[in-house]
Image 1 (tube, rainbow, N blue to C red):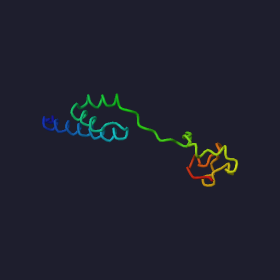
Image 2: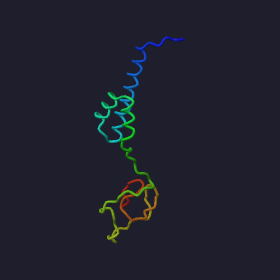
Image 3: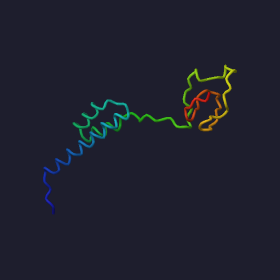
Image 4: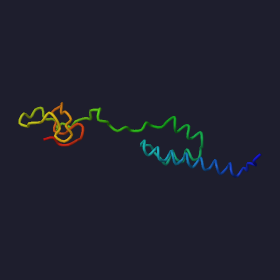
Length: 112
């Protein structure tokens, strides 16, 4: 059999601790959490710390997609302004302008 040295196991455990801490540091930044506190917590508590982090972490913020309707500022709504001739489609991306607003809902270009 291969002799297992205690030093090599200890070095491996330290390496894994550092990897866990780096993962938590980057993940907490992406989730808007305090990265310094969580990184030190996981570094010093090990496997228990990473399990606690996975249980209490915030969900990642999601980006809006084309299917979601973003909120529209009041200055872009042109319903009360009959003088403006707002087209039914965006001249740039050809998507429909069903809400009759000045900015395209899909590409963000100014329509009129």
